[in-house]
Amino acid sequence: MSQERRRFYRIDDQAGIKCEPIDPAQVTERLESFWNDHHQFSIRNDFNFKIEQHQADLNKIKASMPELGRYLDMLQEQIDLLTDKLLETEDDFTDDERQVNLSAQGLSFYQDQVLDKDSIVELHLKLLPSRQQIVSFARVIQCEMLDHEQGKYRISLDFENIHEADQEILVKHVHAKQLRDFGASRFDDSPDAE
Image (cartoon, rainbow, N blue to C red; front, side, top):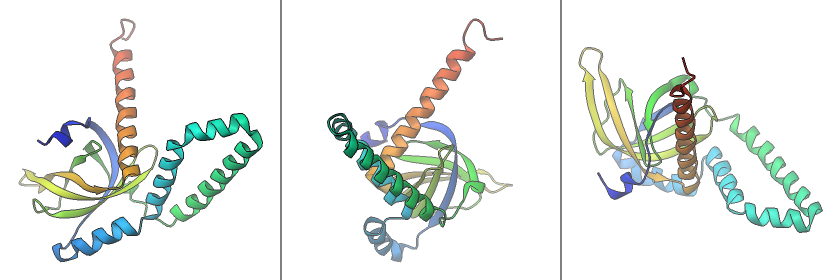
């Protein structure tokens, strides 16, 4: 296990998944497109990530120039409306929800399709309940048959190519789920719990 993988917490979760194996001859071309031509929701994720990075600046502007602050808020709302419209055209694969073990570095899940170890897949991930979508090109680090009769495989992937904003979304999602689970377990362990 690499040092990088140790830096990220893992959670058990539910997520929408679409996993497409990539022909090795197409990997370079697909990766160039991934880094140069963002998916529609990747553009929004990146936009929100940059807004968060400058939140302190925006707060200072609002304090010293309230009119400008309100105008900037209005512009952000308009951009959100436009990106919402763009996202309506994206595939909805929430129907393909699966149990996953997830971190900001990778995930594992079960499926019927075998994937070759070390192969590259394009992974679309929809986080729940926020419905935020993330695209990554991931490497198959393990494909283990669990049930010979039913043909179920446990797939483990590392996100080898992921936009910084998308990885930040994963970090926050994992952290929020940990806090919810911790709060629920504290409630269950309280002396008043039946």
